[in-house]
Amino acid sequence: MLAEAQQEAARLGHNHLGPSHMLVAALADEMVASTLRHLGVSHATAKSALETTMGRSEPFAPEDVTLTPRGQNVIERAIHECWRMHHAKAGAAHIAIAAASQDDGFVPRILASLGTTADAVIATLVARLDPPVSYRAAEDATATDGPYERFDLDAKRMLALAEEEAREVGDRGINSQYFLLGLARLAEGGDSPAADHVLRTLGITSADIRAELAKMPRPGRSVERKDLWLTASAKLVIEHAIDLAGDGTVRPEHVLVAVDTAHDSIAGYVLRNLGGTPERVRALLTEPRA
Image (tube, rainbow, N blue to C red):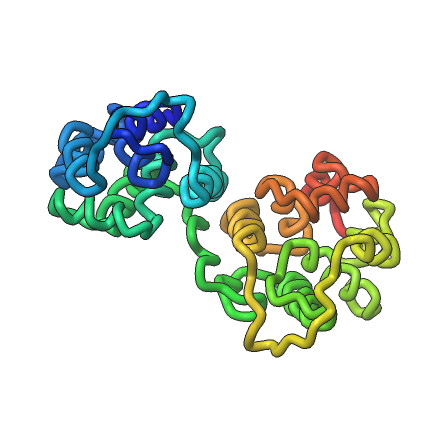
């Protein structure tokens, strides 16, 4: 699909590959095209709108067309959308959703000329892909205010303590690595048998977690609580934890398993480095608590 987008940019004499080219290329996919047909969007009309909006000059060789930072963002967003929906791999529909999400000055104009909007395109494609209930559940969440109705007390405290850990080291963006520190802090408090059980079962101590994460860069600046926010990766972990729990209660174990299913690189690396492989962590969901 990216090759098709590159060809489209080259055909129009554009030496850059951005969201607009990727959106048009995604419409060459039959599923995407059929899903958006009722909105008046087709591959042919989108190609025409792209040319009218962005202009045309002497064609480029496709290999001379370079990916723009916004184009790279589309790829990353498409993969993120794929993971949020628990799909095996990102396809044209995920690319279309990601491209439509980019306000690069051209995508909204192209869609407007076709009589639709980015919101309509995204909503229509998402509905067709039938995402899980957890999809976008944590979109506007903070560590202490979000879709936590079914989180048990330990899981809620784990997230709240993660926020405190991030604030203490001056990190505005709360990554999933802070969830691990939240678990360590929970165990250190001495009043959470669940946290003790998790770490003991994995053969990991809170000191191990702190030592491993101490190797990571730390901002070291003063941060107010109001300035803290959950990163996209952390929100994805929360959504996956909700999905893993099904209709049941979300426990700290679900959050740890979600670190792997949400492909969190840093927190996942730390767990693996300490012996907490995905298989061992997932086993926590079926092992009885002491």
